[in-house]
Length: 396
Ligand SMILES: Nc1nc2c(ncn2[C@@H]2O[C@H](COP(=O)(O)OP(=O)(O)O)[C@@H](O)[C@H]2O)c(=O)[nH]1
Ligand SMILES: [Mg+2]
Image 1 (tube, rainbow, N blue to C red):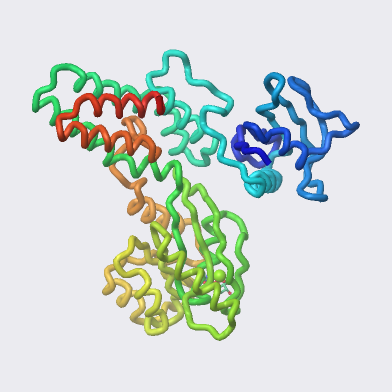
Image 2: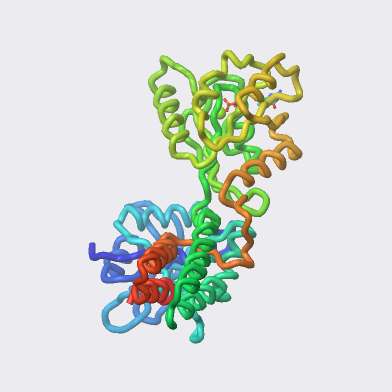
């Protein structure tokens, strides 16, 4: 199969249609593999073809395909039914066939002609398309209205002229402010991972379901019910978080359960923030592993089963370990609000910045800003100007 890139043009919603674009040499190969036109009508340029989308012999949706451009087919838009199932299936199928991600400039939009930062505009548009939270939308719109590009251009203009030390110091301070805000922007593009940890039966899956607003995980009084890792990007308050649930941390003889526990231990290392779930009905002595796992990590403590008698001394022990626990009963709405507020406060979303300010939000932008900063610090104005222009205009 020739190389191709694939991406989704429409937001991941719950209904209607989803449009995917494939682009590159391999477009025809991909269509041959995944699309069976009805009435043997092969999709031709600027023509619409209706047919079935298949993965091997299995047909999993119907689609309308439109092929763009001249004699050699280089691009096709595939409209399938919306909703997470079909969309996810098609994305995974593209992945299996070796798709690269669709470059941002191959999407539906082109930046406005007078855009100060066309490369930033396209990245912001990609963020807008995938946005699930008000903060993501606000940041994308702010960047699309050139807020970041304007600041970068203004810094470039300040160092493009005769530079003296105060000018250089001022420019570096402005770049530092951008770098300080960058984690907020990066967290908008890649939601921070929040992992629930605790002993079996502590109430992790109950809390996970409450955070998802849906019964995603099985809840049962039987220890070891959750084995695999469950993961969901959820919008909580104004922000999106990548919430993980999994097996409880404990020793087990069951090999599958042990694998689940190992997965959970890895998740603890990968997570940006931990929610330490303490079973309100068990003494701290049985929950020492939870205390051990969170040492030195950003964490919010929760004590479950507040509707029952909390084990004497448990809250004192948790407070002694430096945490102020949120008490919850089956993830009740009020406690969930408190929990979310605590998570947000220790996440990059808690940084003192607002989307009214210029905020970098992709590693590419951050790298360019870092390069400009180091260039100014060694009085290499030319390199600094080039780096800032590249952030605005993209690689030339
Ligand atoms: N009374 C009470 N029971 C709870 C609460 N949270 C969870 N449970 C029960 O505790 C058991 C284990 O819960 P689960 O969420 O599966 O725990 P996990 O093993 O940590 O995922 C289930 O029977 C739940 O119904 C709570 O706040 N109050
Ligand atoms: Mg569970």
